[in-house]
Image 1 (cartoon, rainbow, N blue to C red):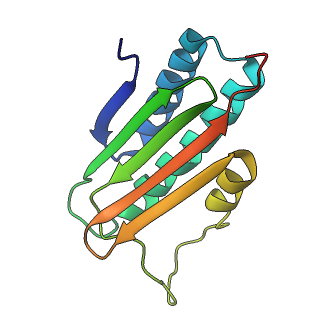
Image 2: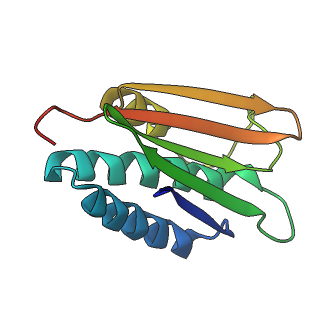
Length: 134
């Protein structure tokens, strides 16, 4: 049985809350403990906010925000991806940002992997370990 969560929405600010809620509901359906659910919702919110803020900067219309969440016995994996311009240095950026999103994701997650290419989008895979008790 495939119990993966797959979401594809336009990368708009109000969609971050929708994704957060859907991930929380699926995590509850998985039977995960409240602390794991809270961590999961935090990392997903940060990853989606990065897509909304950065992936399609300067584009006339927002592109897609794709989220997939799966679970196995030991972990939950969330993959957040876009088809934007990729991560590039922005030395002259005027965007006010704490630049804490990836640091927070790294602190909460068991592991994460970031893949990005010039004009080929970005994919962030995040793993959270599931404690033996749930």
